Length: 149
Image (cartoon, rainbow, N blue to C red; front, top):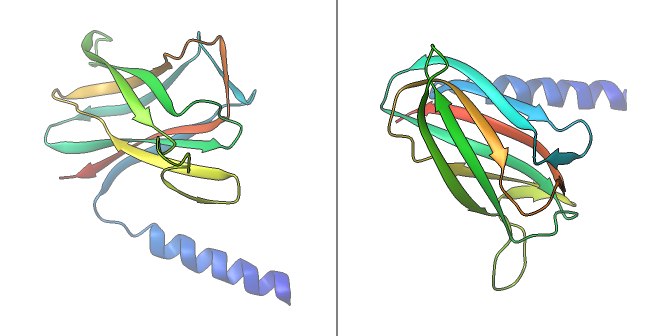
């Protein structure tokens, strides 16, 4: 009886959250090894999106992440696989004053969303970690969400 009640609650929450009319695209990729290797590129094929839209990056991280922020590079490509934009970002994950995790979450896992300053239409987006370590631990999932402005 208890499991059925929990299943109904999960189904209702999924139904309510899936009815977001502003969302154009959303996908997340888990890092299977538990580490984001410096050579690993996380890629999303969103097809041709016209501007103006708002593109967000979602970083799901845990308390094992040993830095205050995350440097990452995003590369936008067109349908011919030509780079149309490439920028380095500094995304804060922990408050610099008190060390508390930023974003939403509970327990030891949190998700931080940040807006990408995209100026061009693109077909795919590629993310690379730009920290000074070969294997970046504590990052569980990386995602891209595109919403109407």
